[in-house]
Image (cartoon, rainbow, N blue to C red; front, side, top):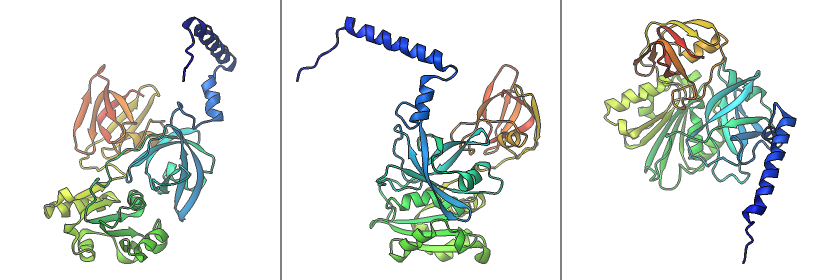
Length: 367
């Protein structure tokens, strides 16, 4: 079939006319641009910043809810176990947090889900669980993270989760982590039976023989620890183990697996940074805002600043996404993960991650 290609001389007037019309539109709509109005009409359109629209909020327990999100047209599919960064306005301030994707890749409606557990004093988690309504438009990042199953599934797998640590594992289970080639045991801990997120679905998988489910309720059974898990799962050292939950539980598991010389068979996912080394704090000054904060040596600069009312860039809050990076103009900070000290002299402008850095003496942040 023949095609007609416009001659350059005929195409150029139309291009010039289009450009002039856009300039006129920009003048008329100042300070907003035409693209701003397009965003209002079709926030999920191609070419826009990646966004999502919350289609439904489904309550799982008294303090946990699943958000059904329709991602924009730029969304690329995720790998089960990965997380996404989500940006939402809370009291007029854009806040970013990271949550595991819990949905089945085969959803027919094209939506994805995240499941959020409200934590005490959690500004974003409480907003998402208790106050967010369908129709809310949010910012999204593409999925990331390495807490995923290998392409060649292990013959025997053990999942150890507590609280909202079940969320990345649920993403795996919904995508056939328990297929016929894999023997799956899930040990999950929650305060009570009513606090088990996805309780009905997990118990149905167990009743159908797809997984072996071991529920532990801390109000009655106490905290989950390696000795208890060894009693519950006698062949645990034969299994590839995936664990997600509170830092204390993960550190105990890592120590146990290291003692057994099986660290290469344990994979962990943290929702909070692992704090290994703290020290003396100091005074943190924010040059542009004129705010000064006294911070101890165990509190991330990001948290200390927000507690003092300073609006800070943030993301995953665990040292992965680099959404919190700011220049250190002068002074010293300590990386809470390894104790490494970073210093800067006037004019250096060394970049630091404020979510995993604490004051190590007086320091000045360019913000």
